[in-house]
Amino acid sequence: MIRDLFISYLRVSTARQGASGLGLEAQRKAVADYLNGGDWTLLGEYVEVESGRKNDRPELLKALEHCRLTGAKLVIAKLDRLSRNAHFLIGLQEAGVPFVAADMPNANELTVGIMALVAREERKAISSRTKAALAAAKERGVKLGCPTGAAHLRQYGNAAGVEAVKQNADARAQSLRSLVRAIQASGITSTKGIAEELNRRCVATPRGGKWHASSVTNLLARL
Image (cartoon, rainbow, N blue to C red; front, side, top):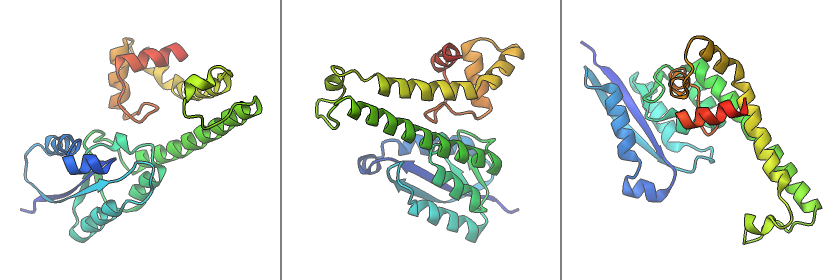
């Protein structure tokens, strides 16, 4: 009988985390919990110590090549941590390697493709609003790059920056309006229940994490 083959891919953001193992053990546990015993073989583990903003993923490329050579399935501990990086998601979608995410086991190539498009558009929107807010502040005479940060900017008024952040959050909330209303119409009305249903449907928060009652409360307030 042929055993199922897996290759795991883990990622931490800093060299310090990589050296200390901080975050890696939790990811290894997530992979182990997903596999949960059974008749399988974990052929290898690839650990990426990299900034989430960088597009190069040498360890991921090695993991994907290992999968192609052996016919193994790639298992990722936490897809939600990578869901805002369009480059990673598109690469994963186009690799042609079967994969599964321990935190989003129902995710597939179509899901990842949609997440990639959303991540790309969100990054563009955030960049445009940030540039507009900085330009507006500069026109008002604000000296950008001040070491005292926001505390210094308040004396000039940073309404433009605050408004840009608010508009971005409002836009994200409106994009979820129909889904949230459908969940409520199905009889799930508590904030905890809505959070669980959003997580079940693999819908990430604006920051790419999981929903909780508190984050749903904020979402409903914007709606």
